[in-house]
Length: 151
Image (cartoon, rainbow, N blue to C red):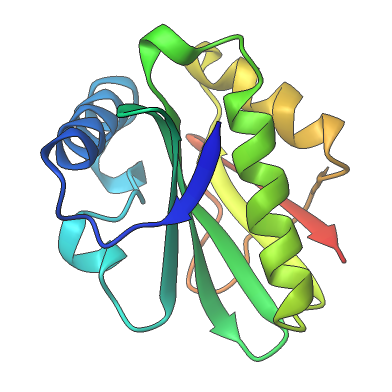
């Protein structure tokens, strides 16, 4: 598996992001969906990586700078065919290594509270994330839970 910086121009990547947003809207109330769309992921404060096996897309992860010492993990998604193969863990590790190199002291994230997100909660816990209060512009929301990791 190779992980590379992505410019979001490839059709496979766009399709995975479309699937991701559709699933977020299918599992959470609209006001609780905080996933970035394509234009949001192209912001100057966002870095995006994709994981590939040959020409097959396996997953995506993004890191958004909130301040010089705080970043937010965004758009973690693994393709259905690649689930259970460690892709999300590798992408998360890659994003966290990048955050450390860039000098961030903390990485936070928001995810859903529904059963659909249970695997994500386990992934973040395995990597040392702990629940935290809302951060940045987030507010308390029964459909959102927040995690952070001190680097």
